[in-house]
Length: 230
Image 1 (cartoon, helix red, strand yellow):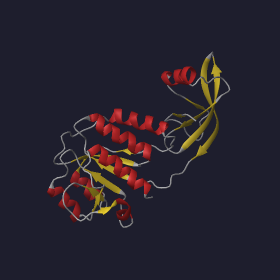
Image 2: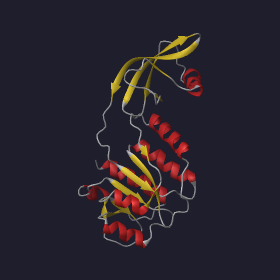
Image 3: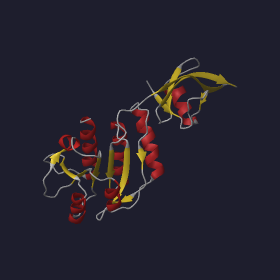
Image 4: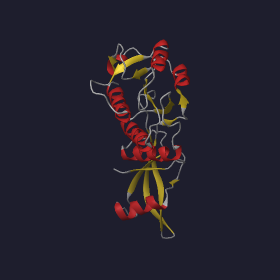
């Protein structure tokens, strides 16, 4: 099965639309032809079963059935500082989407070397990863927010850091947290003031294992552990 994306797809759509590069992929790589069927999604839970037709010698895509997909848990959320190399943050965005994280927030910390991300590029990566992993719900990519603002808005979550502290595993923490949000710091980790601020706001300190991980690796591991524990 191959999944395609049309953000304008809705329950009343009679036809779906895709760009020329996708049409070329459908024709030349997948070798699909008139009468074959494809699957499209709008990233909001809809799946369209689409028949390839022709119109004035060009391919068109007629909707033959609509399927509504529900999602078990909409609350999983990872916040990660923008990293020095943009492709490392983008890697996390891609893998978090593949794994099924529902919300992603760029987190501006004291030690953050960058303060922004390329939202257009990240959203394209999210759509590509959604299609690759055959999912029907796009995660929400939030605007960058400061560490303290995020904590105050998302209390009772989890924080992973490299400093000393009384830590538990993510599966154990998820049994008692009110918020399935986890925060991962930048290169250089969180500052002690930030860790203390998270503690004051009832964040659970969690371990990702005995090895010290790079920030992007830590984020991917955290996503995997959080989703495996559902």
